[in-house]
Image 1 (cartoon, rainbow, N blue to C red):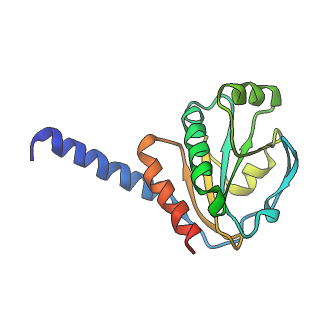
Image 2 (image 1 turned 60 degrees about the vertical axis):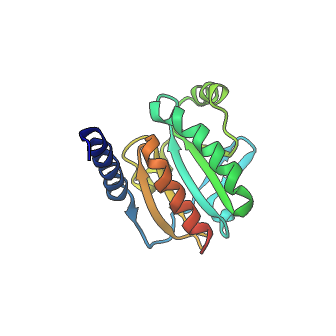
Length: 164
């Protein structure tokens, strides 16, 4: 194999390993919460029966700028199959979140937690952090960060949970 092909293959293997290592497996119920949202309030337990992609983000998060268009696409393709994307903003100033959303609109549910209580329940350590929650409200896995090479693995997890 030519050196450039070998480097490309090694990068793909490294990306897959990084994805697998950063995706933590769970088997506990997802911590419930209620937060203000653009349209009233949202309670996680009200989404039971759906697969939930719970994403924690902030306006200053560079990778979040890339993840929002991808999440819009994911919601459009899998929403009618039972996927709900819920993005929880952690900015202390909600106006900063609104400015971000003007540039990077969300075609999914957005909630606000300026006090940062919910990420503490989930052990969020960086932005963005995503959690997969099964239809029965159980934590399935988590993923920290967002890179283009992560999307295939993230989507595979969504498909797997939708097919259960």
